Length: 503
Ligand code: FAD
Ligand code: DLZ
Ligand code: SF4
Image (tube, rainbow, N blue to C red; front, side, top):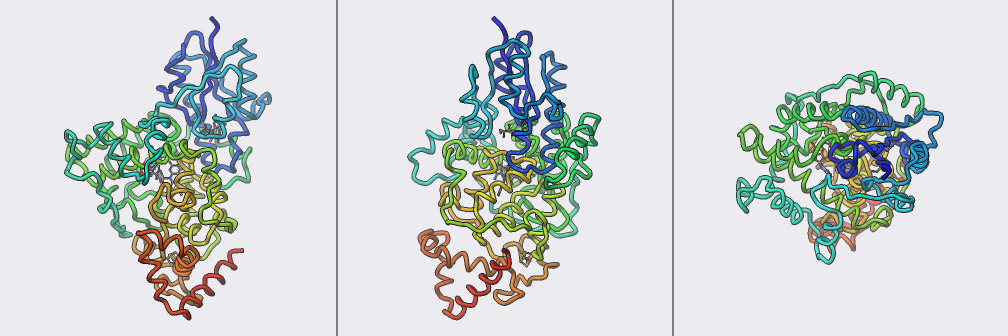
């Protein structure tokens, strides 16, 4: 019996991938292909393309060293057809094969395409804790879909931070102890640098030449692009970041993009790291008394809770979830999401940092760029395409629910129980951005007023009916209702003036 072609995608770089586990080194051929279709379906950040290609090339070399027969098609190969389907066709013909096997991709558009490919066997992606069909069964028919319920199931399933059937240290969730603001003089760890080797340098050259107009900078590129380096980066985080991760998880500081965050999502989502292994290592740090429970639980919750939960929602609600727009938001994405050219110091810092590192941490994404878009009524689809393009960790299964569900409330509350809408006071409490801003975070009206303050009340008034029905927002609606008509009018006028200036 002739062998099969095993196609491996740019975010499937795991030796334990289901298609490799089902494969036969002697008879099967592995294919990895850099193709323009994947490199351009959104205008990806230069760093994201460089990271994916460099990681793919290193993974191909590792597979060869392990005895696999690997075909690797580079983007600038003159024979490259530009699409995965084209490269699969060429490889099948090259080797006289007729059958193909692939682990299910992380994006619905590609799964739909592959379902139409002849002689293609699709295998489940078992690199996640929750099977996507199992999640849909769990979610279907439930009245309120809350991450916390799902998270407790995952704790029980994995035994992570469990003492028998009870949560370790007596509580399931230490979220309330994850909210300390950071002081500018904190001693912060620096993420380790992995200087580009010859393979990565070639990729960097290719990206410079091939994607000159894409957003972002490649300067100082030093990302981990191999499993060994990703593991070293994580070991560094365990020692230097994790102890303070919990306390400062929500903090933001100008000029400090990483604080105590792990900065491992690009490697994790590409398959270089195993989520359960990371969580076991974090738990071991806590059990050894080296890190506090709010750090260990906070980290584990993000991985086995949020990461799995958003994936479950994505596959359960696709197709269609990419078009939800419960708040009927239509405003085009302001150009400063690309240029960083805005007087708002917080937004400027987050966009600049995104441009320089293809990274922003969760609260920057949620409470600065996301919150601004929510308050200003930016079209969620345009925003989704921005997040998908600009972060090195962005694949639709994880980015879309975070953007349209968590950050924009565009699914009407399926994922989040209330909109993550906040005035400037939240940003002021959690960061030092306001100190250098031309706007006054304490001013509620007038030309100097922080735009987040103006837009916050405009948002409450625009969505008054819906928010009044939400127990977690009703108090803010009552506050709005108590404002005098004159004050309401002035806030409305100031917000309208600001929104006009965006155009
Ligand atoms: P840490 O803060 O150190 O957290 C550790 C790990 O937990 C992360 O590496 C990540 O794998 C996981 N995690 C934390 N929060 C989430 C979450 N909400 N959803 C899923 N995983 C989570 N994350 C992505 O991986 N890809 C995306 O495209 C993405 N888009 C986002 C868009 C928006 C609007 C928002 C609000 C959040 C998004 N997130 C996304 C979640 C989160 O911002 C990133 O996972 C996190 O910033 C990655 O940085 P880190 O590795 O330093 O994470
Ligand atoms: C993100 C990305 C990029 C930029 N380029 C490629 C590529 O050339 N070849 C490939 O196989 N995968 C690439 N990827 C990752 C895919 O877009 C990803 O596998 C799908 O979006 C499914 O998650
Ligand atoms: Fe952002 Fe407002 Fe603070 Fe300026 S004053 S940094 S716009 S929150």
